[in-house]
Image (cartoon, rainbow, N blue to C red; front, top):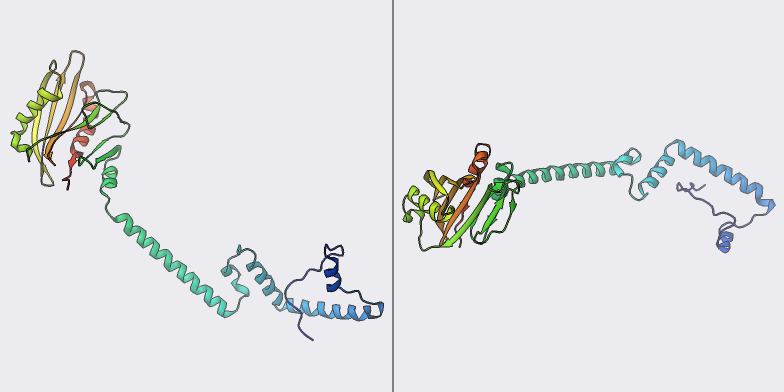
Length: 278
């Protein structure tokens, strides 16, 4: 006797929408052959139960689950698979593990590569970077300050609540090659404060001026106050010459808030960098 099929079959209902097909698949039987047909079905049912007890039915169910839109992963059903399939599943698992390890290593290497702009922002919490590729400079400003447009200034960021807390950058053409060609730090800073950075009616005082060398470029940095009738501004500045331009960065705050904000303003000045343009 041929072994019955292990795949489940479901006969069409009597009221099939395709009666001719149903009639061809399920021909009527005479009463004379009914007994023989019943015996055949009983033997087939017994054989199917025997196969189910020894595991054949389980493999049929597992196979059916694997084909259900791929929702059941093959390795979850490996208990009913043969040795060859088990070895294949093991190799696939090992390959997935190896790929995850390579991906993790590659990600770690990528994250370790230096990114100057990202590094600058990360190194100083509470600051945002500004980079002007056209004029070749960059700096940091405190988070929360907003960019505003001021005639005659290249970049201006300020606090919307404390108007004297701001940073500005200005550039003008020059034939000089180095800031030291203009004189020592105190003389250059004094002249710049009186003629450019403060109003003629304000009383100014230079507190400090010094020379700094950063990456082979000379900067002059200075600190000063400018007193008006109703306020005094305490400010910091940085100047340098490069790319045929005279660069000036100035930042400051109201004198009454100087002690509270001076560290942030020093960070702004120290972050000012000029890159050589090709």
